[in-house]
Length: 166
Image 1 (cartoon, rainbow, N blue to C red):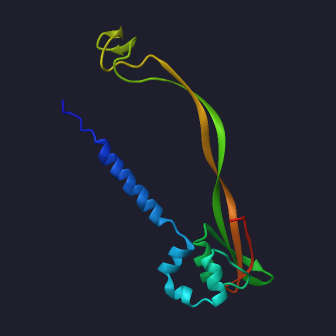
Image 2: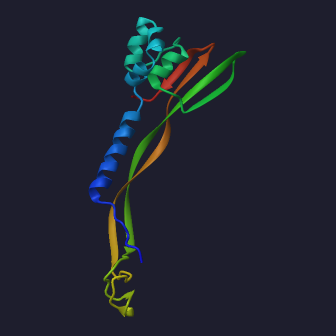
Image 3: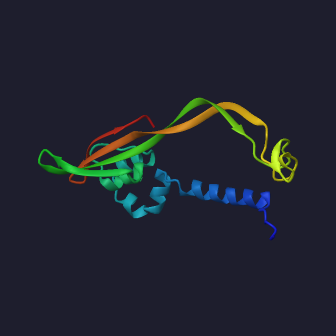
């Protein structure tokens, strides 16, 4: 039988920190979008640059300005508005909803009294199935999606928009 290799806790902790750092760095903000698209930002009017820096939009803004302010939309839909082609960008968010939970389970592991092991049912052994039930309660968090904002475009410019408080 081959021995099993266990990953040291330190290495697992380091991997978790690296993944968390990459995740945080991948998050998109107006600042990071402006830094990644300086030519797009330079084409905006002074008023629009100020709004984009604060993650705000207004009627008349271009798609580029909305992208810099709010980021890539979660969904894009197209249609007709008063005989003209229109486009709608929808942004989704997630709200945490807390709830109480009651849990019950049975243990699994070695050296359980009354477990199934070397000695058979009721015997002792390192591979026994645990015998103590576990009870617990606590809060659980579920994230519920919602529409955080929408921007409607006609001829490439915002004609209307809606946003939840940011």
